Each structure stands twice: as C-alpha cells, then as structure tokens.
Image 1 (cartoon, one colour):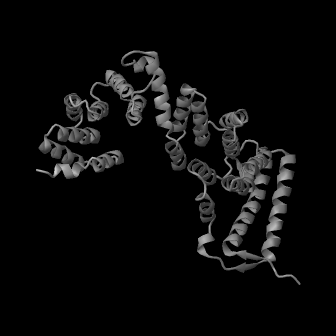
Image 2: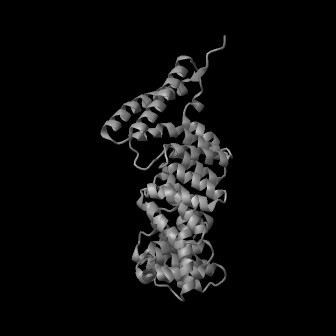
Length: 386
C-alpha cells in the first residue's frame, strides 16, 4: 500500500480556492450562454474543461494529507523572489513585471475570462522558465496560453519581449502589434516598443510610445521598468541630438514639436554625459520658450561651473550670473540653491554659500542628486569653515 500524497497547507488552500473559482465559473458560463455571449460549442467545451479540472482537484484533495511547511515558502510571492534574485538586472526587472502581472490580461476580460483562472498558472510558469534561463520554454508556454486565449495581451507582450531579446525582432514586433491592437492601454507593451524603437533609431516613435505609456496610467512596476532602462532620458537625448544636428545655435522647440520638459531632461542628461556644448544649446532652447524657468537657468549655470572646474576659472563669474537669475526666478528651486552654493564657495563667498545651503536644507524637496553632490564636494564641511 502506497503512502497518501501530502500537501502543504498553502497548496491545499490554493487548490480549494481554484476549485471554488472553477465551480463559480461553470455557473457563469450558463449565464453567458443564456445571454448569448458565448456559443453553445464554446459553452460545452469550457464547461467540460472546468468540470474535469474541478474533479481532478477534488480527487487530489480527498486523497492527500497535510504536511507542515515553513513560512519562507508559504506564498507564491516568496517563491517568486527566490528565483528572481539570481538573474541580471534587465532580466530581473522584466521577470518581475511578468510575475507581477501574471493574471492573464485579455482584451475584454469578460467572465468567460474565467479562462483567466486556467492560464494564470501557465503565465507564472512562463515567467519562471525565463527567470531560470530557459527562454525557449517560456516562449512555448506563452504560445500555449495564446492557444487557449488568443487575446491575452500579457502573453503576447512578454513572448514578444523574450523574442526581442533573443534577436527575433520581426516576430517580436508582430506580438507587440497584436497586443496593442487588443489593448492599447496595456502599459508593459509600450515599454518594450519604446526600447525597440530606440534601438532602431525611430526616436519619434519611441517618444510616442512613452506618451501612450503615460496615458495608460502605468503601475509602479511598469514605471520602474522605464526608470531602470532610463527610457525617458534616452528618448529625450535622442530627440534633442537629432534636432541639434539639424540646426545651428539654440533650436526652436515649438517648431520641432519638442516639449520643454523633454528638452530640459535631455539637457541634464547631456551634462551627465559630459556634453556641455549640447547641454548649453539645449538649455538655451528651453529658455527661449520659458525665459524664467528656474531649473533651466540653474542647470545652465551649473554647466558653466563644471566647465570652470576644468581650468577655465573665468567662467565661474558667468555661472554665478545664471544661478542668481535662477534663484530670483524661484527661491525654492533646490538645484539653484545647491549649484549656487558650490559656485559661491569657489569665488570665495563662504557666508553666501552657507546661506544657500541653509535655504536648501529648509526645503521639503531635496533630490538625491543634490545630496550626493553636497557629499561629493564636501559642501557642508566647507560651509562651516571660517
């Protein structure tokens, strides 16, 4: 006589929950048939599938005993984290998003969307396969999901993303396009289409995808995908570089259809990329549209200050003029205060430098970049001297 199979408490609870959903789905299917929402053939096939699965779960529950299990493996979330920790950053963020949204989002999501219950586990399995280094198996599982539910935008999106990373660019594009056709507001596919457009040099398309992403009210996980890959910065820099290459001096943002916010982000990124000439032209373009924009004034002054640090010390005076304008435009702008504190220290005005740093300390908005800058240049130590 063989021993009865054992189930952890959380597994038994999951099976009970799944059986409850299946039984409820059978009732919903009858209502959908009466309402004319599904055909008799679909009703029969789905009802037989749900009934058979419910019966299998019942047999498993009846023949099993419960075993103790540690809390460390008691939830699907902790199991997901276990394999998530071992993959590289880009893959990790992608896998995290796959898992976070493994709920089979299909176009329409009606209650025959109880199919969703049958595909949830498959979607998690696909994400796990990718995370464990088997992308081909992940693609296969997503394909199986799509055989059950052809409108499942999650499966289309993440199958496309894996294909894209494997170099199957054309096939990925087909998956992405189908996902957008079924649900234009699914934010994840917009992220991946932005990446593809950037890689292909289609900067206008990339910007449009990011606009669609923002309009879709993305989740925190989707927003983190954008931040991790610095997509906003990459799109802004690509657009602005193209515009700068096509013009002389400060380009006309309005005529080019580039927002001042995007240009400002590009300018700040140019500074970080050590492209001061492009940064200055970009800030001038922003100020051509918004002459009193404090962050543009501050960053223009900061660009000059960084150039002065390389040995062109006469530029400190010019930098200070721009930073004075920035503080006049908005005394509460944190960049203006910290950047000016730095320059004031360089031109031997320690009391004024301390005053700017004190003004910054009084602000609620203290960007991490500025806190790092204060630490890097020892502005707090310098400001206590004398």
